[in-house]
Image 1 (cartoon, rainbow, N blue to C red):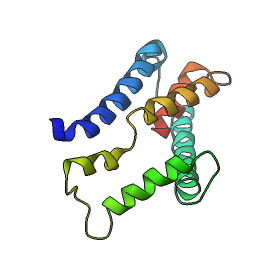
Image 2 (image 1 turned 90 degrees about the vertical axis):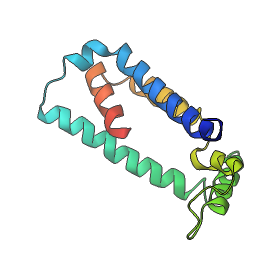
Image 3 (image 1 turned 180 degrees about the horizontal axis):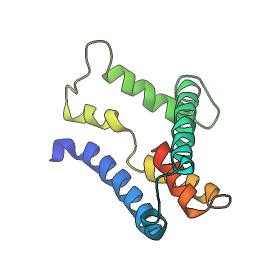
Length: 133
């Protein structure tokens, strides 16, 4: 387990933060019914995530952006470890380059939740974030 701890820690942080969000809005989640609006919020979240991921990956991870140089350096290290035909970790230390920081998903979820909670009701909020996730 020690060798896989970076992956396990990142997974537990993501699943735990997502579970906390669902638990906090369990009444809204249990009241959801299939509808056009339900599917629409899921699709809007999915589209948003694809555009945001592309933009984040394309700009700060591959270009120099002031105050985000650490993101670029970490991502370039990831590409040095995993490239071409070498998509297996050659050492336990390389496993840290697979997932990035364990706190990234909970931090992004919290930031998006805080911003969206100001403008969306609970069902739409949970559906949008579900689609994005």
